[in-house]
Length: 229
View 1 (spheres, rainbow, N blue to C red):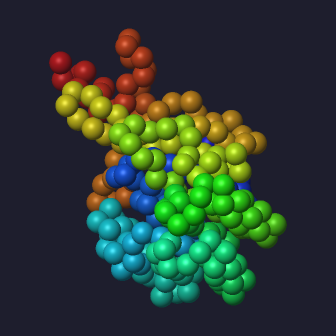
View 2 (view 1 turned 120 degrees about the vertical axis):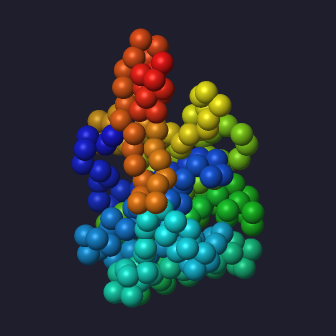
């Protein structure tokens, strides 16, 4: 979906969607892929402990503990309400300087809105993104969208500072709710304009093939249903 090449190194990626859309799972795959390349990854999580996150990811076939044991992955878990924005930013700067990561993950940045105004969160994240870009560090941020439908905007208003923006959506058809993914933007490269269904399986995330039918674009599951008829 990104010309078959993935993200640019040193770029900033945003993954947004409603609760349960698969944001943390996508971020975990991002971490796993980086560690498999021998890159160092630093993950800042704001809504769950590393133990809970590790348990949840094992349910989709991802075991990140070996990367922690090898020193390639380090988790920092901190509830937003524990500190003000400046303290959170200072702690992240210190962790980045000490660990020297190739990749940084923040999951989810929208939780910072519980302790500060939108403008302050936006300014803080802009400073962090600029800091990471100057060091050539690739960053992935997740953002929780509130409500029953996905929005092509973010509560923290940070879409303008990211290079690639992925939106996770809910596909409803024939009494089923499935997960979909599309690329809103990706600077400097061509990208797919299709919505692709994806599955969270016990062996990872799988993108379902896209099929064009008489009624438009059909996902793999829709095609199977059509063929059954």
